[in-house]
Image 1 (cartoon, one colour):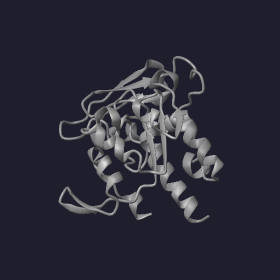
Image 2 (cartoon, helix red, strand yellow):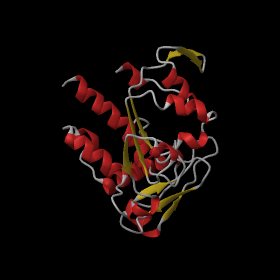
Image 3 (cartoon, helix red, strand yellow):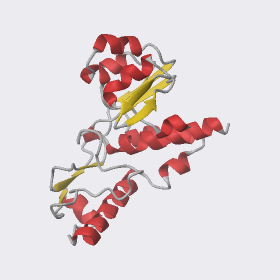
Image 4 (cartoon, one colour):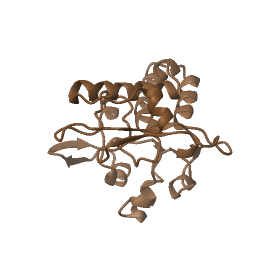
Length: 229
């Protein structure tokens, strides 16, 4: 379980897979690469942005199982054992914001998912359900309830911390956007629950915010499920 509380810089994915047990320095600390047997990659494509693709190709053969969850059949997906087709940004409801914008956007679903595509949230929910941990994963909320919960938390934080009044969720969702006006010393989009799903913090805005929150929680719960039989 300790490895789940650690991390690596994304540029070191090949180093981690090729050198399990080796140590490396990062941010002034010595860390140890885990022995990674399974890779679950939700969104993104390391074969697009990694600095040495030949080395990554070798490293990618080391894990026993690779699962890729993505809307597109990327180079990473083509090298996966299991591909889970995720919906695109126009096939689900979501929120879009980033630390350099003064707006939060309601990403309203335009069409139903094509083919067998499903939202990141629905994929994780069904896998969690099959392992008996769905309630812990969803916390009793569906997709829209999570969006409302996260928006209202940040709306409350904007009011308390910055004295700025944002519209309620229903008004925001109907209009399609809401303005953010924090003071100059504070982040534009306050993350009130850093261990839960951020409103798009680690990925580009158009990809699902569900993956950011869901994958971390999902992995932790699956590991606990396996550990306890």
